[in-house]
Length: 141
Image (cartoon, rainbow, N blue to C red; front, side, top):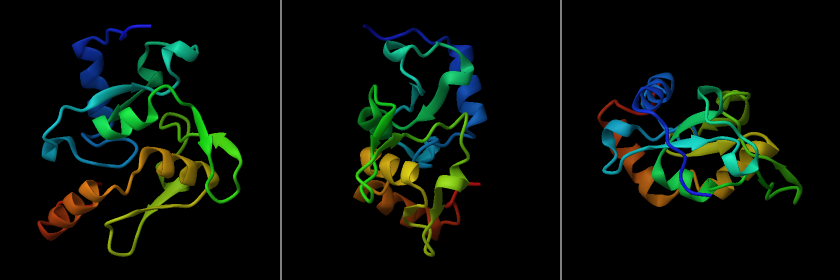
């Protein structure tokens, strides 16, 4: 299946709702050299719909790692669990910031599976968080 067309107005609604942050790793669009993408949380290929309720703002790295997946292995239990769903789950239930705010800590099996699959603490994003923290611009609200 090819790419699904998302209207500019729908893209704006998704970005506004996400307050300009990747809904997975919390990278900020205004500091990214790459355009952010619209993630179909439940991929169209898996029965998801092309509607606002099924869309999340994602940085290209998180969206690329997620691809068409809806579940992944929890690295602690070895169980297959659902990935974090930004419309149905609270980020703060599944994740929190480390004391220095540079890394995302995973609290639940879903958080661990999502963090591992999407590599939410990849070196480049942790380095950017450190620079932004020094400027008083991280963590995002």
